[in-house]
Amino acid sequence: MLNRPAKRNALSLDLMEEMITALRELSQHESARAIVIEGAGPAFSAGHDLTEMIGRDQEFFARLFDRCTVMMETIHELPKPVIAKVHGMATAAGCQLVAACDLAVAAQGTNFATPGVKIGLFCSTPMVPVSRAIGRKRAMQMLLTGEPIDAATALEWGLINQVVPRDELESAVQRLVGAIARSSSYTVSTGKHAFYSQIDRPENQAYEQCQLVMTENAGAHDAQEGMTAFLERRDPVWRGD
Image (cartoon, helix red, strand yellow):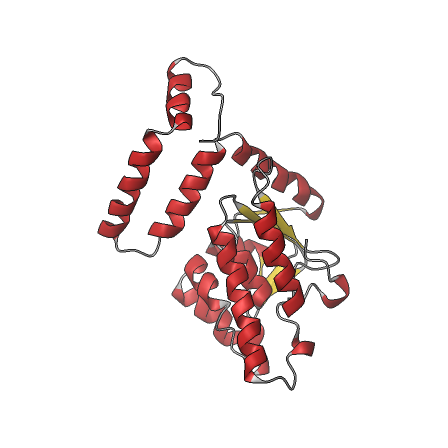
């Protein structure tokens, strides 16, 4: 959990270091089938903590944005799906965090924005996952105007997967976790890794990559068990390999 409610869960350097460590530690828990990121208090995250960015040198900024990039990349590298549970607002690097997560569920009334242009600091790193999630024209609209979009628009544009009433946010996320947990942990991990490996490749290279993945996957215990269970009309018994 992002736990700086008084700061709207601003992503300070310390908080991002804590997040990187927590994500990596949680991914080692075999019983955990998915990781949910949420914000304490009235908002998901307002982005970088501007109070620690005044009067600092280039070395600090390089460290800050490196840690931010590592945090986002860690989400993709983890074997378990990462779900953003979003309420209030997700702006700048907070919006980046939502876009970087594998899945995202938002409460009605949530706003999303990349408003850095308004304060002279273009949201250059947030635009990396945001543009990949919603496409060029929509991303440029958010980036160049800094104006927020509501949850319904974020859903339509593909930034998030689902919008629910605020009091149903927890149950919606748990349903998503439950749906993931019904499948083999090995298969989910294999699929997630393959997705990010192929998504930015040319189509022929993507097919080449995924053919190798499916060849290995098909011979795995859980794939053989799953196919056998389907043919025998019974529930599979996953082993995780």
